[in-house]
Image (cartoon, rainbow, N blue to C red):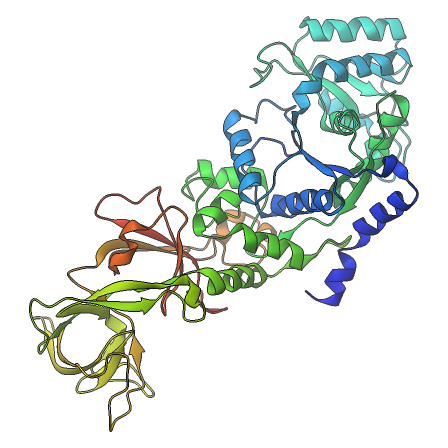
Length: 552
């Protein structure tokens, strides 16, 4: 990590260190991760997760997981369960699990308190009228005719709102702050609205639901959160966060601190747009490996370690900036290069018959699982008379500097023997369908005498290999910032997925386990897809290519 990133990632720690020095919050640090369950988490949420849980761990504090479930029209249990899985998969455990809906009764009572204090009123203006009254950045807002409604009348109307006497949108509860404030968020913001929507936890007990800005700060206070870490778009909301808590007798008054959100090239992180991709079937679900969701990265073969490393590398700053996709790719490449066992897979098989190899002989060749990590052991790879190699590892008329197999030439099979091509077999259309070769029985594990063979290619035994489908995933978008396009769908990469059927993988992969990751030699890093694999057909998803800039 660069020195600049190390320094920029410290501003939150500096605030906390200063708070601890002054013995604020009794020397405690308590954070929270508060997602709305209206979609799957994405890579931007991973940054927030790592920050909130990481800060808590660093200061021997606590971090809660809290669902901001105040908008039941867009929320459901599936999303909540997915969020819990993602947080745990990333390697974190929450101190306590909460829901904003846990506090509905307390939130209602606090709203009554604001009304009784003359700091909130029931407004009959429609949403359009409220927007029209709000003013602009250069002009003050206009007060609602209901702003000075008597307290007793406000209390009566608010209780009747809860009782379900009014239609959706007929009334709204607003804070009474300052319609001339330079901060538009302080111009009498809405605190409650009427919505007759079934809630996935509270059922039909409520027909009024609190707004996010009102709910969030009180939820933090009720959980005794000390540092409420959020992204920069909430910076203008901080005065409202503080105003609400200043008016109420809550157990604590957390400090809101903002940091720059993650903006990663070639992705979008708008839940609305991600949902559109899913519902309109541009991708195969929230966990499609092309999606920037944590579930998608998980299925693609990314590791929790790589994602945590990525979040650490990019740091935490106060300035919005774009992160190159190559940074994330570097992190997973580095992890898998060190930890993924090697295996051989042939994507476009070409049959090679070794004429001088015994018909019924099968050797179990011991090949290292990792060239730099002997502790990962070795595996047995069957070798027999007929092997399969990649079609492009043979050239009848080779280009310059071609170091693979050619007619009349030799090449080494990885971890095996040197073979020589003696004859090229073609079909009626002139396509090469088979090579007739011989092998040098004295070259297993050693070089031949009197000649140098430079090329090394991978292979599998035809009789012992397994049929596999390899899915070559590329970036979902063809431009670095698809949100800049008039229609982000126009920026979709038509070549974001290539499905290869008829591939063959070595015998050892027959017992691949869910989330098993491999470096397919000379091909890329792949993850076993246990969801789509069926008897007789293994499925592997490409996580990343072997080299930066190698995307097709």
